Length: 99
Image (tube, rainbow, N blue to C red; front, side, top):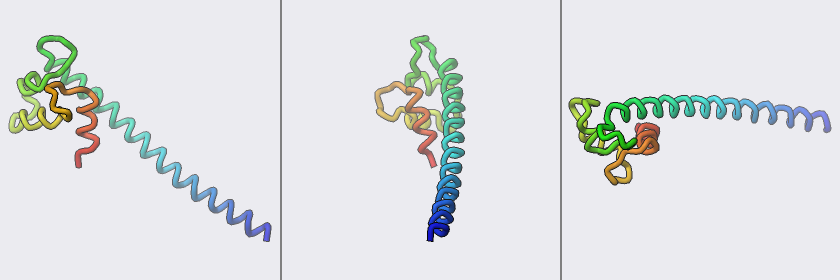
């Protein structure tokens, strides 16, 4: 009986480790995506921030040719709380939740 319990516990341990290894890989990939999005936001901010206040307003964003077909739609979509300023967190949230 002890032998079967040890085998069962061992199998459960291995199964849990396999599940966790997949979770860690997924978390690492997500962090990599966030880092890429942060870099993209900073590049856009460097170009868009015309008054050099360290913030990207929706108006400044719309003056950039990000997407010539839909610049207003993109900029407004990024401003999640609709306060007229697109923060790094809002930008990342938009792309991380976009399907």
